Image (tube, rainbow, N blue to C red):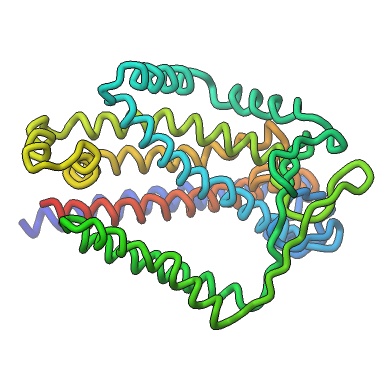
Amino acid sequence: MPSLRWQALGWQALALAAVALVIAAFTKNASQHLAARHIATGFGFLREAAPIPIGESLLSYTPSVSSYGRAIVIGILNTLKVSIPGCLLATLLGTLIGIARLSPIPLLARLAALYVETLRDLPLLLQLLFWYGVFQTLPAPRQSLKPLPGIFLSNRGLRLPALVWQSGFGGILLAAFAGLVLAVILARRTALSPHPARRFAAFLPIPLLPALAFAILRPAVVIEWPALHGFNFQGGMMVSPEYAALATGLVLYTASYVAEIVRGGLISVARGQWEAGAALGLSRAAVLRLIVLPQALRLIIPPMTSQYLNLVKNSSLAVAIGYQDLVSIADTALNQTGQAIEGIGLIMAVYLTISLGISLAMNLYNARLARRTR
């Protein structure tokens, strides 16, 4: 009905106007009070030199020389550095535990249930403090553990040999990505092939394309080994105790929820699907991979999106164990500049952008999955 449509549009326009008026009133009120207290406003402080010491950075940074804007970018990268691997590892671990909860082996199913009931019932902050305390009990650098040659584990973190970046590595990474995409396409086309050799051959592009790129580009391979100098290690790649504790706590905590989501999705598939797959001569693992799991994904994806969002937002607890994520660096910046509104606004904008990006990607994947299984 056209009249109902115009009426709905009118109510929506009225709601938007009301929201705009509230925001305008808040902005005007805040500006007047800040001006009365002679507090600077705006984002000009992002160009000023930031005297913030930052221990972990994916970008070059010099305190009192680099800007607040660069420090904020480093905080965003540090948040993504723990969030992206955290989502991947929590998905992998949670899926395995969720499948284990349905295992016909009683001991395995009970252990998986114990894991879920223990981890999800304890506050995340308490778990982060626990893991940080565990990593702090490791020996000092001079008495560090050496599980493998060139690898040192101490209370200063994990030191690993690092590959020095060369110009040809970019082409090899592109070849590796192309090999992964090609392998996914081939694996989908050969998933139902009765020949194991064809299913195995679908994954060959993953090692072959990077190897071919390496043979063509021939970059120099230089490895930087960590070595003890004075009271700490120098060189190599470092995984700090703060990062390790945060990543461990987030992955283990989120995996307990993911496991329940996966278990619920698998239970929702009719028992007859298992029996039909077995009647075709498929193994239990093949039935799970080819028949049950694709159907369960329709129910698994929506709640899984919420867990990814929770993991990203929960990473802000990093400030409790000293890991310098976005919240930690932005909080220091707003304390030094006094521009709390702009700092909090930046934090909210970044988390909102990341969350909307995750939601958009998962919704697109869920819609594509729904079309395929319709």
